[in-house]
Length: 415
Image 1: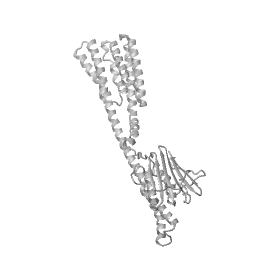
Image 2 (image 1 turned 90 degrees about the vertical axis):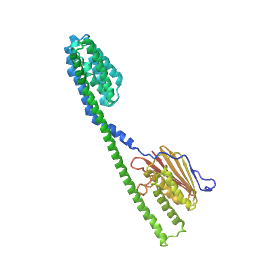
Image 3 (image 1 turned 30 degrees about the vertical axis):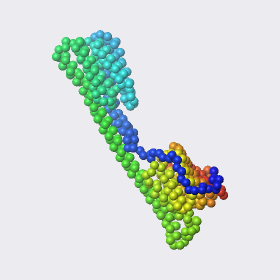
Image 4 (image 1 turned 30 degrees about the horizontal axis):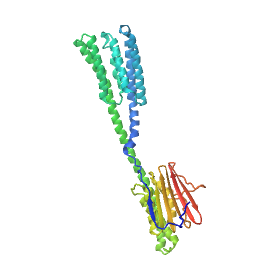
């Protein structure tokens, strides 16, 4: 503990370092971000399972029997068989990413599906082009839907247009290109694309609706939380004001009735203490960048008006602190400061995860018993001088050293 070589400061100075920082306010978008993703994933779980079951059900129950039935008529049956297995592998990868909510390598896998589509079409006999034996054309839309889930509709339409163009080339090359074949081609294109596109449109609308609902619910929850917090703060301030009315009213009554002598140093200290408490209560509701420094300056102003010389030094950037923590940091020091008689040095050292407030004054001062609790009382101090923190697990430590010459009081908050 250092002391002034001259026995105290020669004048009252206030030195402020680079203090300042964010107020810690939370935007509404931050509050809505989490619930939106959670609600959307929950609502989409059923449609995702349905899309996976449709894709694999069609590929297993419809395509596989058709491939086996036309096995001898394929130009290269083993190419078709390998292509069928490749569809299974790509579909399994897409379904795994879809159900887990992770992102798959979309366009490389879609490229693989289109290559298999071309290979199967090249191996399919002309009479089976519009049959399930040409499974690449019939099933491309459902596996592409699994890969493009949640993306824009034009992307799915573009993939299906490429598949339809590949099928049109096969129809023009392998058939007689008569009106009947072109009509069957148009009907097949319509039948293979309309349901996947309709499902993707419905899913995108459902996602947008659930996102809006989640954001609205988060906004309502934030408003209700702010209202509840404001109510608790109002009640706490009202209780503290009631306590201040009782203690300050007592000294004012004694002065008015002549039972207290204004020239008595003890009476002056009581008045200074009540004035500093009232000033700090008023300062707590001010909207300022550094509330703790603002509250401490309000207390310093009170004692300086009574002629006490105070050095006020602040170093570092203050992190955002709730009212309860600021109150626990300031109360013991302001109570001791109000009892100081000759001079005092008040120091605030701030780091992102720690704030230390210390007071040095000559040893004739009365020392506070410990940090103030949220209801205005004092917290009991353990043997090492530490006080318990608030319910959120944060802690405010209180240390005090006193001898005949000097008093040193310190409060420390750690994140």
